Length: 482
Ligand SMILES: [Fe+2]
Ligand SMILES: [Fe+2]
Picture 1 (tube, rainbow, N blue to C red):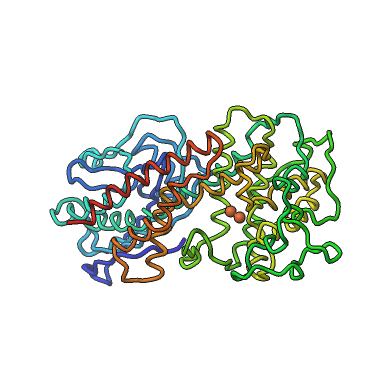
Picture 2: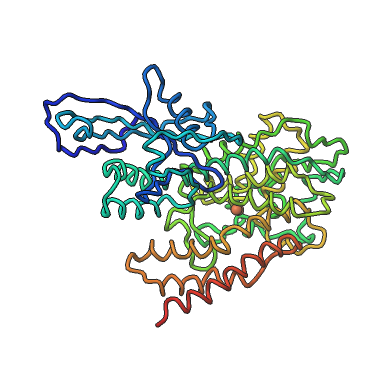
């Protein structure tokens, strides 16, 4: 186990006999709160746990001590090492001796059942009670005060204080990761409520109000310079394709087929997310996002964006009552892959990232046994997701619209505030509160007020974000003024 730190008071005779009493301590978090023991007598906190007895493993001692002190039952399979703290000080019972305690800290979870608390004499005397606290950092202050005031075992109170401080962030990160893993797992729990009418890839990619775009529009920009028709990499015998054709580079327009089974193959979302991570994480993609906003100045991650958009696709889908025409699985898959082309478009600069994502998505789905028609449908969503002007078309595919709305919902609201602040600091480390506020008012705020949402569900979430932003602006304006 890695050592977190050690405490050595050097107040003992180094040649004295050493009395060793290792202990096991539990860091238990549930619903955002951490279980700790409070001493009513001396008003300080410590993690539940205690001495490891002869013949006991640290894990066994952990389970026993937590049960005795708090009444909760640790699930042994959830026990995970955190770190150890070595403590050496003069033995309280033998002034000539050295007290050496190796403290092993573990993360673990508890079951719901509770048994009566069994306390040792000193625990009753100190008035120990189990409590759930929200902020470990607030305990740091309380323990520090207890040390100054005196009373209780100062070395123990200090040790726990330092572990509270160190574990605080780890507890939060573990919770976030656990909840995220749970959310990814839950993606597969939704029962498909397909309207029963399979849409074809052609429905998505080949309608642009009937007006094919010029070739130069296809690749959007290449360092700000629209490409000449001849430069477009996707040519069809030298004839530039219309923008809508871009995602369908297999030379054929997929035909509608009536037997598309949504669940004809197992969808492994976690594996898809990992794949997209492997493509996007190593790449520094070009920055863009609003006028003058360069997200990558602060290390904006396209992969993290993808995960967040996935959350929005799921929320939009869940909130939508009439699911006719919605294809849950395909929407989720398209969302996972929607920006996978960022890597390639960044390195070649030749293609729009949406178009670049199509062959990558197609390759993945084909090699994972997805039927052709379904593969092309999902590729159609990926290839068209940047064509946001189509959102107001009355006959736009509902899955495409949902993906576009989800894509827009990210980077706005509370996240927009933080994003603009990060950008300002990345540009100028002397930036002030006012600079951050000003940047937010220039960039994300106007975008927040120009809602691109079309569906009632999209509008609902957008309005929520606008509300919080409105409040924020009101408050920060006041907060930073005299
Ligand atoms: Fe995109
Ligand atoms: Fe995106």
